[in-house]
View (cartoon, rainbow, N blue to C red):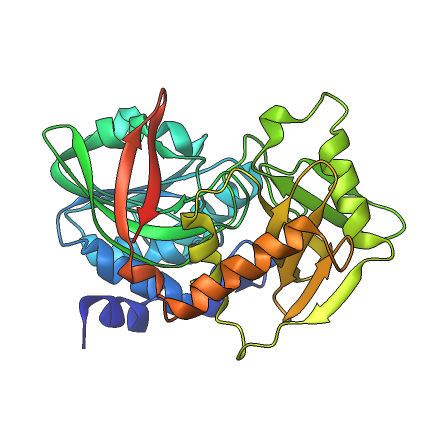
Length: 336
């Protein structure tokens, strides 16, 4: 068995995710994915580790097992309710090598730095400079990062920091809730880069990568969303069953300034192209929607899909990652 598998045997998952005092919390990730990220993190006995996103407390308890009695875990979350309960549950189990703090995790937690490892269960807008600054030389960061300036376009990156400079060693399929500056109650709506949202007669939203060219009334975003919702042209995608992680990553890697993501119905994301007058998207269920049958955006979307299929529906892991320095950190971009 692996170290993470051994830790999972020792930590009662249900006790954290469905605690009898607190009740079930929706702020939790798939345990199998948590185990994968922790395997990539390679936290070892005696290490000083930080996690961003306390959630139910389960991931922090696994980390506490991995670093052992001589190690330390610092867990950060913007939600005081989650932090209080996680601290109590850890205390109930007799853990004294982990402490949870109410904090904006994107700023790290300098009081306990430097960290041998940092892992994030939420997605910052870019790789924060604070994380790189607070990692020990040769240390690792495992975190989901955006690959485009629209929601839900992410991969999980394994990043090594040497001499104060981060370098991506690998990327994997995955993503988590967007990091926000205040506790997030509605987990169905993205926490960042939503350019227009309808709440009646039914919830819907849109995100446009060209938002800087829209006006202060969000006329372009409103128009694009309205054209996809009312009397839209629909057609089935005639390819095989969608490989959504592959398609999502491919669309982001195009770096097209008209890239668009939308949520037109609950639990269905859509990716495509839009302008101030046209829009076309492919939904997760394989339905294409456009403002009209001869939409210029629909032509672009069809072209993207043709190129994607011709490329063999590449997996996210096959792209070449690169970090581009920004004012507050590094942007992750993928190319082929």
